[in-house]
Amino acid sequence: MIPAHMARIESIVEEAEDVRSFAFRFVGEAPATHLGLPGQFAPFRFRIGDGHHERFYAISSLPQLGEAPCFTVKRKPDGLVSGHCMDRLAPGDLVAVGPARGGFRLQPGNAPVVFLAGGIGIAPIFPLIRFALLCTQRPVAVVLFERNAARQAFLPALQGLAVRHRGRMSLHGAFGAGPPAMDRALAGVLDPTSAQHVYMCGPAGFLDAAGACVRAAGHPASRIFANDRDAYIAGYLAQPPHAAAAAALAL
Ligand SMILES: Cc1cc2nc3c(=O)[nH]c(=O)nc-3n(C[C@H](O)[C@H](O)[C@H](O)COP(=O)(O)OP(=O)(O)OC[C@H]3O[C@@H](n4cnc5c(N)ncnc54)[C@H](O)[C@@H]3O)c2cc1C
Image 1 (tube, helix red, strand yellow):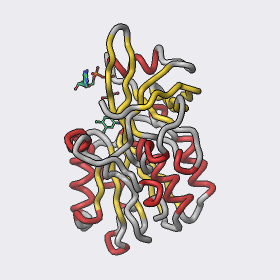
Image 2 (tube, rainbow, N blue to C red):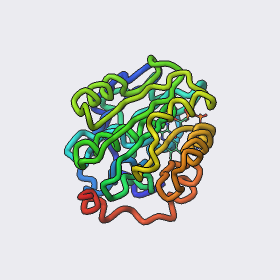
Image 3 (spheres, rainbow, N blue to C red):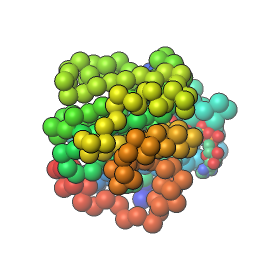
Image 4 (cartoon, rainbow, N blue to C red):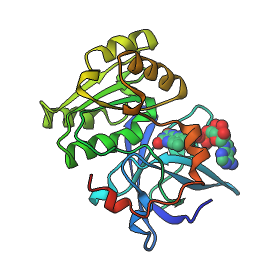
């Protein structure tokens, strides 16, 4: 990969069924911009047996605000790296972390923001929600799509945020909701007349269904921000690192 920096796993948090977050600390100094902006993703390289394996993960905390950097992994059935993370990765272990990049980040302005998270798509959305609440005055609505509440990562933390920011943040769980129920889950949340910005992240099928609902509700494409993983990978190496990441944080 990448100009990677070695990092040591410091602690592990069980976020939900088959979902764990890993806090890490760089060994030596990494550039302040290495962890990018809230919502961005980084390549991680793991040593497994005799080989090295690289996968992308979102930075799921806010190192920009002084927190320990974290990534959050959901187990993929029979997945090599996610299985390694869930079953063997332990505090003290080393991983190599490349620079976080990508266009999935909070756009400037005062528009209300709506976050739609499908499954582990919550990993980049969680820091975006917290960033919007902590660093802007924008109203925030969050809709979670997961098979059931036990599988929903960050649910207690999100519920706590909704209580702390009552009146400014609303939280909706569409557990078990498939595409027909998606219309209903979004009906009370989407309001194109308020010029909302809508952010969505999740598997390709989720993005297709959610995007169709949001467009049908009358939102123009210019206010819809989706993380398309394939496009992200294709664009990753073509993008310069965010040298101005820290400056851009002052939205
Ligand atoms: C932009 C982006 C962000 C992501 N963010 C998250 C996140 O925050 N949390 C999360 O849980 N998951 C995230 N993922 C998915 C994650 O990167 C892994 O695909 C997932 O953990 C499953 O990996 P696995 O090794 O367990 O599964 P596997 O099925 O073993 O591998 C998954 C895929 O990795 C590819 N692959 C296999 N071998 C290699 C190799 N040697 N080098 C490169 N690719 C290979 C193959 O396409 C394979 O289908 C993200 C993916 C992308 C593209």
